[in-house]
Each structure stands twice: as C-alpha cells, then as structure tokens.
Amino acid sequence: MLVIRAIEDIPEQSIKKDDLFHLYLVDAHHHMGREKTHRNTPTGSYEFFQLLWFEMRRLAERAIERDELLFEPVDAIPTPFVAKIFSSRDSWSRMKHGWLVDRTIVFPYSDDYSKQNSDGSASFKISNDKIAGWTTRAPHSSRLIGFARVDPTDATRGDDDIAVRELDRAILDLGLRGLKLHPLAQLFIDELEDEMVQRVVYRAAELRIPVLFDTRNIRTVTRIHQLVTTMREDPRYQESIGNLKVILAHCGMSPASPKLYDVLKDPAFTADTSTLHDQDIPLLFEMASERVQPRNWSETLLFGTDYSFLSVQGAEFILQALSRDFPGDLSDVQRILGGNTLSLVQKPFNSGLESKALSKQMACPNTSGTLRSQVEDALVQIIHQSEWDLSSVDMMIPPKNTWPRVRSVGDGGYNGIHHDSYIVTLRNKSKGYESHLWIRENPGDVLTVASIRTRGKDSVRTTYYATANIGEEIIRHLTKNTNYEKEEAPFIGSIPKLLGR
Ligand SMILES: [Zn+2]
Image 1 (cartoon, helix red, strand yellow):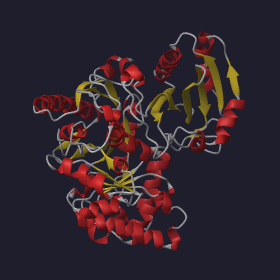
Image 2 (cartoon, protein in one colour; image 1 turned 90 degrees about the horizontal axis):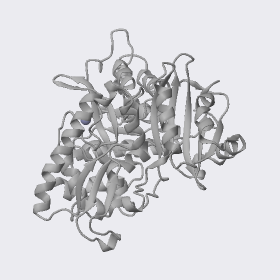
Image 3 (cartoon, rainbow, N blue to C red; image 1 turned 180 degrees about the vertical axis):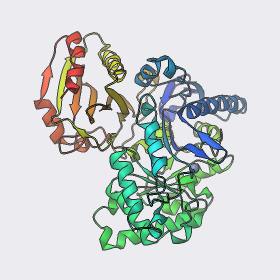
Image 4 (tube, rainbow, N blue to C red; image 1 turned 30 degrees about the vertical axis):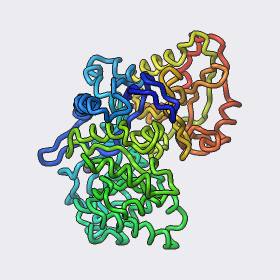
C-alpha cells in the first residue's frame, strides 16, 4: 500500500495537515513470460515496483519544491496477511519488496507460444498455463491475478470454437480471471467486428470476466464500441451481453480525443492508463471529469504500467493523482489506482476443482484483540504443509458504485479494501479439491472462519461486501451451520478440521 501524507489542511475533504492515508494499488496491465528481449517473472515484477517507488520518491521531491502536490508519498507497505505469507519462508522473504503495488493483473506477451501448434491446439495454450502457474500458487497468488490470452483467428485455421474452448479452459479449469485480446499482434484489426471475435467476446460475457483490448488509436476504440453495439442488437447475444466489461488498454493512446470519453459514457467500458505520460495525464483527468457524465468519471479509469514494455512512467501518473490539479478527492484517487480494477475482477478465485460438500462456519469472540492475526498465522502454517496450496487471497470491496470516503490512518485507515473480511482459496493438492475460507470480523468483535463451497448455490460468488450481493442464501446457511467456541486456542486448533473432508 502507498502511504501518503497531507501536505496542508484540505477543508473541503475534512483533511488536516500531516494526516496519513493508505491507498491500495492495483496494476491493471502487466506482462509476464518472454517476448524477444522482454522477459518477466514475479520476482521481476516486485523489483520493478520497487524501482517505481524510488522513481516516484525522486519525482515527488521535485514536485514538492514546486508546490505541486497536495499529498506526499511517504512509504510503501505490505498488507498484514500478505506480509506474513512472504515472511514465512527464507526463499520467499527475499521477495519482500515492491509493496507500492498490492495486486497486479498479469497476462502473457505475444510470446513463442502465441502461435498455434502444428497439432491444432489453441494459440497461447502454454502461455496461459504459465500464467496460471505463476498466479495461483503461494506466495505469488497473494499478489498476482492472472488473465488469459487467446487468438480469435484460430477459427480460420481449424474449427470455429478453438479460441472459445481455450478461454473456457483458462477460466474454468486454470482459474484465470479475465481476458486480454490484442487485435494488432494477432492480426485481426481488420476483422475486429467479425463473428470469430464476437464469439470470444460473448463467451467472456457469459463467464462474467473482463476483456482488456489493446488499443493504439481512437479508430480502434470506436470500432470496439461498434462491435459491442452490434452484439447488443443481435438476438443471439441477448442473454449475457449485459455482463460484458471492456477495458480499453492505454486509453486508446488518445486522451485528447472527445470520442474516447463518448465511449467511456457506456457503463460497459473502462480504460487503463498505461503509456500515458507528461501532459497527457492532467489532460486525461480534466477531459474525463468534464465529459463522461452522468457516469462518475473516476469509475472509468484504471491505473496500469504495461511493464515490461514500459518502465517507471507510472510514477508520473500516481503523482498527478496526488497533485493540486487532480479534479477529485481521495476516494476518486483510490478508485482509479486500485478499486476499479478489483471491482471488474470481483469474483473470488475459482478453478475447475470440485469443492467440499458442505459450507460451514466457526465463530469465536476476539478476546485478545489478536484473533485474526492468529488465524492468519494458522493459515500460513497450513499452506506450508505439502497437502495445501494457496490459490488466492481476495479482499472484500464495496459494492459497485459505492466506494466510500478514504479515512485517515488515525481514523482507522479504511480505504474500501476489507483487511478484516476476505476469502482465501486453498487447494488440496493430493485430493484435488479446493475450498474458500471466508475470514471475517463481525459486529460485536466476533471472528468467523467459514469453509465454503467454491461453486453452486451456497457459494460466495462476489467480493462485493453486501448481503444483497453475496446472497442471503449463503449468509443464512452459514448462520445456521455455525459452531461457537468461547476460547481462542481450541478455535485456532480446529481450523484444519474445517478444511477436512
Ligand atoms: Zn501491454
């Protein structure tokens, strides 16, 4: 998390000079794997984020001298549970840095595996396997979120559904959580509105995953919007097209074009800010804040770095969001730097593994005040047993369009990310099943740990933290199936039993 300090009183936001705030950062655009001279792994990402932090500090000093900033970046710190995970083994603790960015959306390059094999299997099949390997195992699964890539033009070299089937495999079996499409690299820029592209995009809508399109100019942006408009009018796509979420990479590299903001008025669209630098950034903020109404403008932009194609340019973007010129408040900053991307992903991790038969819960009063930390220690122990792996840690977030005011550290530090309510996905490697553990601090200082099926009616299907979103059915089911324990030690001791079959 990025720790910032108010440089002066900001009465319109009820902020006092020297108030500290925590911002949770998500990089929405990041490559992993290999393409020509580019190469990146999780270790490379964390080192890059450390560099990004140094660059930001350097630029911030100059900006403060010129009196441009409202907030000064003062530190980059991990969230407590993720810090515990990375501290729990020597080889992991060497990667305990780069905490400026908390979570990162990673997807393949156009790498050696981006082309179809002679055996007719899908393009990117091996790349998607590699992304899943990096993003769904401890410790990186607590910091990375994997997106798949497919090539819709596979349909021209085999049967119509190769790319759709690869998307299904990547999302439903591997547990990847979004799709990246690159019309330029995969050479379908002239066929952008073709049936083969529509099939892939529609499947993403059915799977309720976001689709990030590479866009290099406003013409491509307009054509992607046209593609979606056409699909909305097609009776074949009626049922699920409403779930479609499109991310325009690099803001179409067109922050000066009014057409970009016309497209962003459409609630299905957002844009990532990677590649924007210098005067493009204030221009983007100014035009978006004036032009995307009635939509809330700060819900349309996602911070992204495009590492390793780009390096530390992202530092300029973050500082511009902390500057006097930024046309919004800290809640807008938090949305753009991380909240919006988490809202797009919003489904807890789920791979093709079956889950346990029953969802059930344990509850215990937090007498010591450290009960959640003890639970986290127990979870770290569990993922060090050879039987278990950690597929993801997904914090609960505010329901769509309800991002709250960011509170100062002195006032609890709440920024919309619930460190006191999150879902841990654990995979039993030998028995081949997975389980969601929902760790939650409840009113009355009672901590609950629930073991929940990952699919079906009594599962938690969203990280939007509201009963209406999570579903009354699962909440009622858990309340009915709760074991109450008065003492902390036996409560902690029975966590492994919750996971057992
Ligand atoms: Zn990229």
